[in-house]
Image 1 (cartoon, helix red, strand yellow):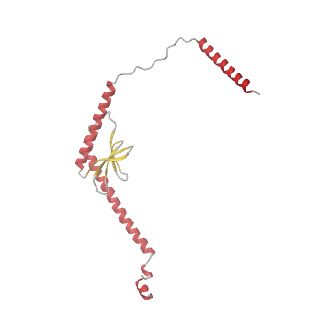
Image 2 (cartoon, rainbow, N blue to C red; image 1 turned 135 degrees about the vertical axis):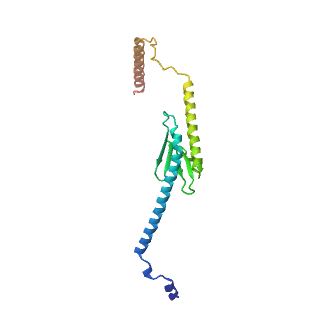
Image 3 (cartoon, rainbow, N blue to C red; image 1 turned 120 degrees about the horizontal axis):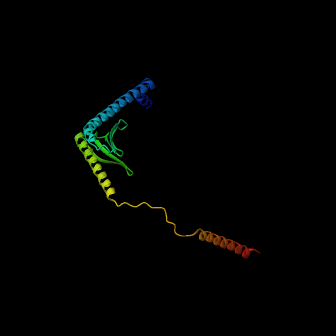
Amino acid sequence: MEENAKSTARPAASRSLSEAIRKARLEEAEHLDRTADLRDSEIARLELLKADLETVFAELPPHDDRFNLALVPSRPARLWIDLFTYAAIDEASGAYLFVRNSEEGRRTLYSSTNVADMADRITRYVAREIVRRERLEAALAEAPRIEPLTAPRASGINLSVVIAAFAIGLLAGAAGLFATVWLTAP
């Protein structure tokens, strides 16, 4: 029985820490190469999308500063459209994602593997946002103007009336205090 246990055990020479460290380093290097390739691929695909959108962003009204087409090579890489929305690449499927940040969290507005479809969707989003702002500005322009408050008019209350009211309040307070002390004293 003991001979079977000895024959199945590995010899000590096959277990080497230095060999295990070397293998771990090789595995890590391969993983880093795959990660770097994925990151380079993400950035290259987002650059294609950015190139498709540059003509759209060139047509923006000059006074509209809400939109800014900016590729940020963060992890994950993002192509920012405005302050709240960006395009990114989904790591699992490789699809373009059009994402909006809000108080409720991130929400994917659209997903596609086709760069032209994504550029069309982002163009429609920008157009809708411009129309929405124009509508708000028009509503503000049509709103009735509220006259600013002017300084209050003198109500005709004389200074002597104010002093008399203060003196009466002072005397009433003193009388109340005196009455309380008089009635509670032993």
